Length: 328
Image 1 (cartoon, helix red, strand yellow):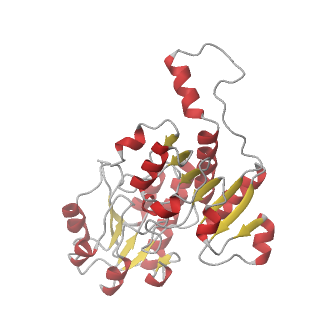
Image 2 (cartoon, one colour):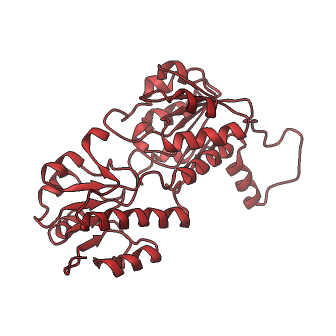
Image 3 (cartoon, one colour):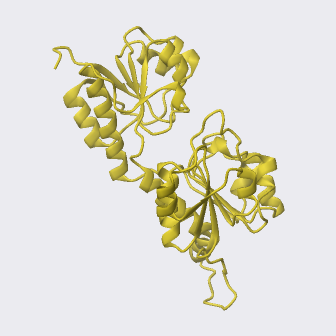
């Protein structure tokens, strides 16, 4: 190991086990405050460290990267998504970017199924009724939702998370369909019992439930735009545990309010914490605070990947989870 330890700056609070191990391995600056850094804070950090460990709440854009110091050689992001980082500009400046893929696929897939059940079985409405104290007992026609067994689930994006969702959906008796940039290998399709659609429009128009599980890239921004959302059946439901920008949130809100889409379950939002206030008012919508990956096990595994990426880089090798522009 080199005599001089790498200088690492972490932008948010991480699990204690991860921060402790970082302290053992590197010259690390940790946060006491868990609020997101400002752009000025990020620039100051990037001018004085060898490695920056940001999260999805940090906007590492071209302007910020342009002010980075010569020391900064690696942005080891804590999370799978890298749409908050201008990877192209970073590479042009000689700064490597790594992420933590695959760790929270099962956690996110669990949350996807939870949202599907919450919307179709009206779980939040039942919870609100109980908390209000207005429940007067069981009735044959009260709080009726819908059965998910037998429904057609259209998965948009069949990577690690999409496939994990497919396995769970099959266990619930759902029929799995998918649209992906590339078709899965025949043996994987067979294992998942999944039907591929080359045309997203054709799939969307026929599904009972749409699950968004693709990354946010320039190609997927507003992939579910107003025109495509209008193709959905009136009794269909859409769930998003991927990235908010994949869905045109304003268009979705209008269609939910007009009854042209039956319901939605959202864990992510187009404008971060600035959620459309009309969306909050709808009873046929379940909103969660971006908690799809929020398990202790998953967050520690994410940290372990960050540690491995930094340690491998320190040892003079390519980080195992290196992100390159061609992947985006």
